[in-house]
Image 1 (cartoon, helix red, strand yellow):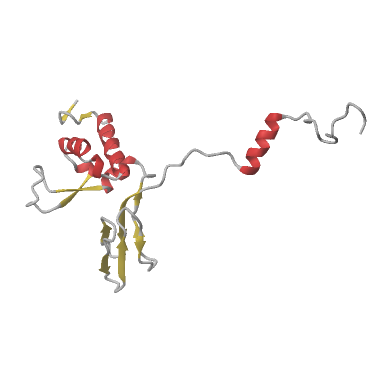
Image 2 (cartoon, one colour; image 1 turned 135 degrees about the horizontal axis):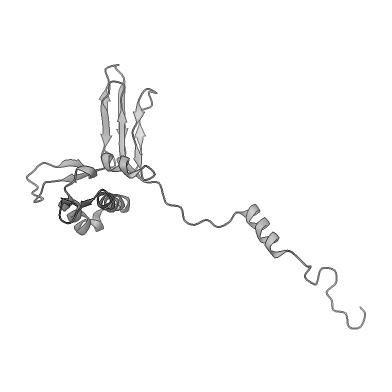
Length: 176
């Protein structure tokens, strides 16, 4: 080794590089880190059979069946957690997801209610989000968030905004 030289040798110093080109190529090869994508949520799980019957699974393991006029049996299961259905080939899935427009979602998504006073003596009935009284919608948002699926809570918040945009005041239940 000559005096004054280090043990370095070939490649010991940094070559001149185009940093921007390096970063772009790195991202092209390994992919850029993506923001966490919003998970697609099932909001309504329905199926139409050839004779026009609508099957609806309202909650997990809500297995519903129908023998159609054509003699075939149709089934639907999973509520908003998963979709499991028959595959006869002539049924039509009417599943609504968080990717659909709010106009579609508000007419499909349902809320179970025991009535105005919450009296459990009344039978449970399901009302579409579009059909909820504005006072009831506000009460649900104010009192049920901790029991509600986040996707459903967002649908209800979107419904309030939708009604406000339609010149409907949800706090006084009067048209503007």
